Length: 359
Ligand SMILES: *Cc1c(COP(=O)(O)O)cnc(C)c1O
Image (cartoon, rainbow, N blue to C red):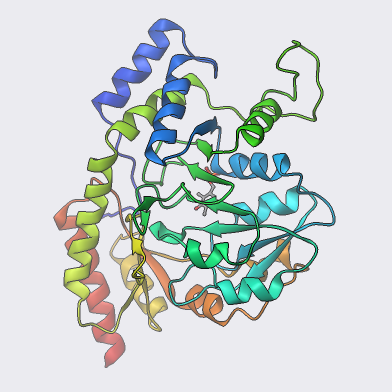
C-alpha cells in the first residue's frame, strides 16, 4: 500500500474561500482575508499583533532584521531542527551557534548558556516536532527569545499556546505543516514598535506616511489573498486537522507500546500537537528499508545542523543528544486524512523490520 509521508487536507471550505477571493478580485496582500487571517492568528496565540508572510523562513528573517541582527552578532539555534532558522541567521551575516537538545528533544538551556557571550543577540527556540521548549527555563538566560513554532501549531506550554512566547513567534503554513496553505508564514508579537518596524520592512521599507519614500532596506515577503483564504479556512478547521493527526499518533502509540522503539517524549510542561510522528531506533536503516520496499514514505530526521556543509564554520557546543537523534530518529507518515488501513500498513512494516533485526 502506498503511503506518503504527508498529504494536504484541502476541502470545500478552502475551495469556496479561494473562489470567493477570485470572484471579488481580492488577490493582493491588502485584502480582507489577509487581515482576518492575521486577527485569527493573534487570537489563537494570545498575542496583540500578527503579520502574515509568504513563508516561515521569511518570517524569521523579518523578525531578526527588525531586531537589528547582523554581522558580528551570534544567534543561538538548536543543533537539531529543520535548517530554516539557522539559514535566516546566516543570510543576515550573523553567526548561528548551535546548542544541543536535551531529554525533551528541544533546545538544552545549559548548552545554550555555555554558548552565550557579549555577541549573543538572541536565541531561536524551536518547538520541535509539535513540542514546546521549556520557556520558564529559557527565560532565565535573560536573552531575547524568538519562538519558532513552525512545527507546533496547537501545542501548549503549561496552559499557554505556542506562539505566545518570546519577543516574537513565527509559524509556517508549508504544505506539510499542521495548518497548510501550500507556502506561507506568520509572525505574532506583542511589541507595538517591533510590529510597526516589521510591517514597514515587509512593505519595501516605505515610510507609512509617505508613499514611495523608502527609509529602510525593505522587502516584499507578504502573504497574498489566495493563500490567506486557504490559511484562514484551515485555521477555522484547526481542531479537526489536529485531531486527525492525533488519531494516527494514537494508533501508532498503541501498536508500539512496550516495543524497543523510542517515542519522541512529551515533557511534563508540554501538551503536544502531533506534526510528524517520530520514533528513534538503532535499527532505523532496516526499518526505513522495509518501509521503502512496502511503498511507505517513512524518512530519517534531519542531519544535525552543524554537520551540514553550509554551517561547517559555525561554532557548536558538544551535541551528543542532537547527534544521536540525527542518527536514530525517523518519521512515520502522519497527516489528518491518513486511514486506519494506511496506519496499519506502516505498523506492519515497522514491526516486520524490528522482528528481523532482533533475530
Ligand atoms: C518548516 C519550518 C520552517 C520554515 O517554514 P517555511 O514556511 O517552509 O519557510 C521554519 N522552522 C521550522 C522549525 C520548520 O519546521
